[in-house]
Length: 577
Image 1: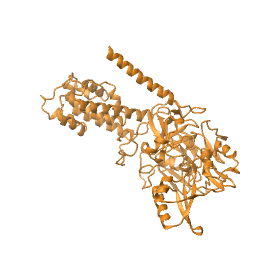
Image 2: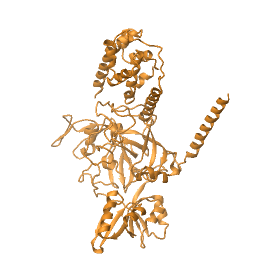
Image 3: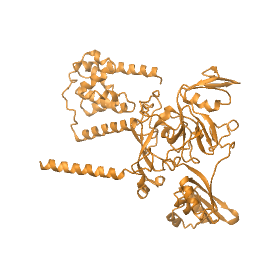
Image 4: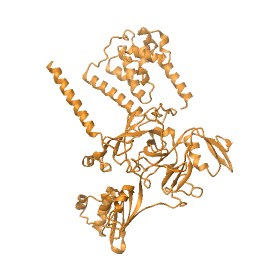
């Protein structure tokens, strides 16, 4: 919906409110006109029902208002002696239109204004419901406009942020994005848990708005944002694509390496901005794929000892009918990444991740495996890991893998092999659009800006011969309506980022990760495996800053113990007195 449509909708709601409640305002001793003045009528209604005036502000906050409107409907009914259970449900299920019944159809001798009514629930169940409602309202307010918890599900930022890190993401650093989706379940994203169905209605949609922030996005910032090209029904679902509102798209976390107005180029996998190589913060731990060579073989233990976990392992087993059935089970259970028959050796080769296959599972299947020890392995390594490996007498050399210039990598933005034969290591130069900036348009550079013009900024685009038409008008230039950013993962060879889908618009920015409160190594192995794999050194550490992260867990535990100790002491003294 446009702003004009929302203003019209607002005044229709105000007219309905006046028609349904003006008699109630009069019964409460208020002049009729107070029910007709937008916003002010809400302030007066709070006085009538005995609630604080600041509640009016909550009625204008998307998502929060979905929780507050039923509360106001019920409170209004009860203020006029409608206290029966069925009357409460009638107020809620009628979406507030029960006020019309009270005003025009109910016996007016029963509609008595009760200004001195108790605001406290009269039963234990009522008190419980009251507490739950306001706890949900408070939690939703914080979650939507201030701090949102987030878990790292993929390894695109390894080793800076790890799979299994649980973050607090600040929305107020860059200014909270007001929800565009106005009807949605509170505190869930795009999917309702358990029933796995959509958690929102696609319309009506609010235009993009953002509350004031106190910080701009800078190069090197780690940023959480809505995935610009998201059409998956559920995250990691390969089913048919669906349209999703911006604020209901999957949340990604990457490092901002280019800001509006920059010219960015990737040379030999290193990012250069405006002609200079980007120096990452000292806490960044970029990771690249390397060939590790050793004439006596490179064991998985050697890689594990330096902290590497992005490499595959290979196992062989005899090609028998029993073993083939066991391999099929392992594939279906997700223990192996692939398998193939080695006909000449009458063997089956199994490929796994760095953890291999649990010994317990092999024992249950009666499967005997022999692990390969190749003289060359591919592994994702940080500079520190490379340094440690080169110290080993078992390693002959470690070579970083870099794709050559001019060799096109499938899926690289803007997906134009002939005009832009780029890859993840050799990319650009490319301009990152800035709001208000104007670029010349031609057939050569149009692929770079096509999705900005159409998908992100809502214009029509046609090409007729050598002529470019935007919204039906021939043009040779375009002025950007938004700022854009370039986001990349620190795990440079294993990250789907702007090199694949291009620019990130400003209206897709969600927030800034500020704090790791929990971290577990076996995050992908299920909840019950976390207990045995905590990364204690990452608990209660900050995401930003410089130097080695410091865990604030001991200070937190001391503070909690101090609070409970003081609370116990206070209650004991109170009991004695």
